[in-house]
Amino acid sequence: MPFDSPLQLEILNAWWHRTNKKPLMRYVKERVGPGSKVDLNEFWPDPKCAPDWIQYGRGLKRQMTAVEGVGAGIPTAFHMYGNRGTPMTLAYYLGGDVHFGSDTVWVEPVIQDWRKFSIKFSDDNVWWQRSLQLLETSLQVAGGRFLVALPDFGDALTVFSLLRGTENLLLDLVEDKQAVLETRDRFVEVWPQYHQACWDLYRKHFPGDTSWLIWAPGKTYACQCDFSVMISPKLFEEFVVPEIERLGKYLEYIAWHLDGPGELKHLDILLDLPQIKAFQWYQGAGQPSVANWLPVLKKIQAKNKSIISYADDERDVEVLTRELAPAGLMIVPLWLNVM
Image 1: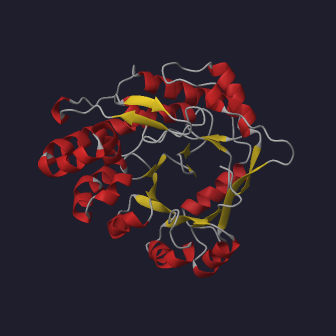
Image 2 (image 1 turned 180 degrees about the vertical axis):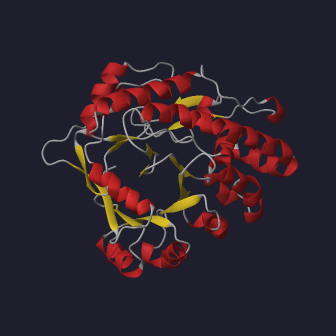
């Protein structure tokens, strides 16, 4: 079934290719009138059991019909277990011990010995099966009225930090580097298999591809490495860059989730990677306003990369539109956005 708002997809296509003539505003707001506040956690309260997918789908449909997109904004059903964010789902598919919080999902570490830890595409993993069912259910109830995001699969080092423990992984990068590199290589081999299986379902319903960040006209993902704030640029080049280069042979549209000031030490390396077409930048809570980060944003634009930037108020919007080139610029007004 075709998406009901093809013009918005054309707008996003122009943003990726930096052919938009004006800065794009992107947000999702609640519809006028009584909303449909749905707590999807009620349909999926326990990680030990899957939900009733029919009831879950009905709840999701009510939730999504209560919002509408503005500008380049498109309501999107994100890959969430209830109302819980699901970061780094490969940590679940590779055997992590999954736990539910009220708004997120996390795993307990399971890696004791890198050389005994198996990384392979496992079609019978319970969390993989539940993700597939969630994706199928979401696609069926979308009916072309809203987009459906593929899972946030994650990156090697951040997934490893969940499966091994952060402190243990930091020690391993020095004391057992080769084992981590070999495991990273296996991770990068299976990553496309998980994405492809999800995309094969997705493309029966929608054109292009939708990551947890944004739609793109071809296979896409918002790559990231939150763990990278803890490592040097030298280690970043050794452990992270090869992953981006290899995924770039599979993906067509890579955006990079630049996770605040702690990752800026890697920006020059990232800007030189042709596989990355766009950057998502948000300075984070407690940081100076976006006006203080204009040199960073201008540096990104100078490399002909598209940008998603976040505005805390109308003044931020004025600064961004005045100081930055419009081509490839997308602004999210946080005080208006509900998704």
